[in-house]
Length: 254
Image 1 (cartoon, rainbow, N blue to C red):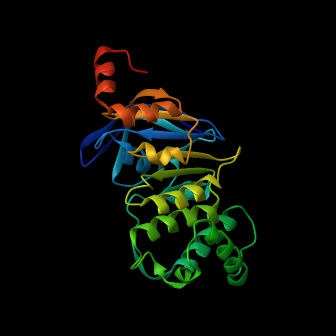
Image 2 (tube, rainbow, N blue to C red):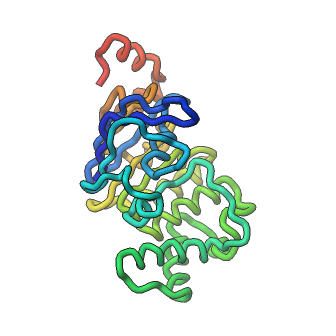
């Protein structure tokens, strides 16, 4: 599904990713953990094509195609989705209108008929139940005046509507209480499929109690320095990152 090799990327002239290599096969959920400033959010933005981030070396292949050659909108049409760490408010555009427009853009790109407003609302109300999102929020401007938990639920609601092939979840758990975390994780789990992949970026192991990854990676100083199974997340929660830093310094990580 996603193949990243020797990726170097900079923002504002500062190199953040320094030779990152990562493989995410189709049907798998991979977790990326790491300390602040290690490059986790940079990775998500580079994959999605944020214009402020410049790739200086390396490659990203998505479904066998050069992802870096695709404009942002083409990446979205091809099924790449990013759940933002800090969702923005968009005044004047209702959540329902925004999502129907996005969904119909994908339908158009695939040569499929557009979905009308009535049929879309039927689907949307059913999907909203997955993340316990009040139907009334669909008519409000996107994220405007929403609580932090509501914004994160709307992000996952968008994912269930768009049904991406590759979902990148950038610290979706940040700012959520225990109940909201359970609900959001449940919505994410409904999207697990042999035909889809997920890249879950998080600081904390608690999210991975609900979304059990197939593989866990540790990202430090712009590179993947250690890879393991779900137990690695528990070890990081218990011990922190200093022991990984010592392994990297001794050349025994990975």
